[in-house]
Image (cartoon, rainbow, N blue to C red; front, side, top):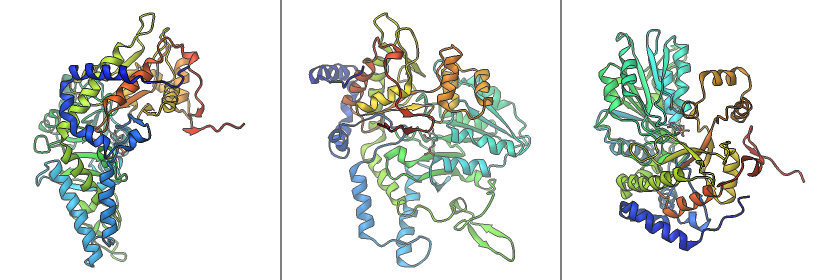
Length: 498
Ligand SMILES: Cc1ncc(COP(=O)(O)O)c(C=O)c1O
């Protein structure tokens, strides 16, 4: 089944003309069509259809050229000393910090702490936020695991956490429910509300005004912007969360290994770091057995920062600025809109739907992430790992699994607390084993799905070819699509012994 697909250029041309009629503003994103042929030409040269932008953005070749030229033409040393090579590096690191703050229009209200990634930024918040008995941590069901993980700090400090469910099938926050939870606190204690500006599972953009709503009710707010900022502008003069977290590779592909925690200055004073490290202190003594933390962002930057890569963040931000976030957002909206309509319309010969899309099926308040499962004509789930494997044969990069976002999947796929407790208490559970358990229970529920995400270098040909691939499962029985040939428990390819 699913032998190598061919894509008749004539049909694709006709589909493109229809697409342009339906989404005429796509033409306003011509800059990105040009960049696809230059800065991102390796995609077509290598026949790669990249649809995993929520996993990681793609870098432009010009970003690499600029960064390597900078490294080649200078001598850089470890920053924060006054020798010339160190000073040169310090200047670039600090310029980048300023650029990040300017990019998000943070004014003088925030500090920018460089971290290894968004998870590193989130861990700082969990470790240092003044959770105490009496305080609450409220978070939406569709948070990334690195936001979920903060609940372990909450528990260890004797505070309580509460999950806010989402509405189905749209996977949005119910405002009345949110307000009720936010109103039920003792104002004498610190409370933290965490939500993603955009869900990395469903693509839903949650209203940024909830930041102000929660703050007005006495809450501190953590806005996880990791999946939002690659295709949307975040203006920190319009809304002022206490904490904003992100990873730069998701925005512009390169460099990996650097993220940021933007912390509002009003909360800096109430954060307590659990330790000190090289680079974080103004003064520390062995015999005096004490230390003074630096009263700036440096207090959160443990040891030597990733100094050679940090200037590449400026280059990446300049790249996005040269394109314009409105252009990127519009292109993503058009391609997502076309995909949603076409995926939703897919039917088997017997009229049954081929797909179940989790989350909104139009482009209102959503980004370019589409998560779905495929079903056979008898409504049996098609193994999503097998779908990924078959996509790989076609040069298509998509992602399957739970995307480190178990809560959104649990709600979207109708998994109950009882289902999840059965899984958790079995011991040594993995996602594939859990899916098997659910299938054995005969309820045909999935845990995990297929995720397609578009980004700044995506073009119509990419989404068209993906549609052709997915349409090839029409009238395919779940037992006829072949078996997964990689060891999914360990995420390793199983080598053929022969
Ligand atoms: C919404 C969201 N938050 C946090 C993260 C964690 O990012 P990282 O793995 O770069 O730490 C991700 C990564 O996918 C994400 O999508």
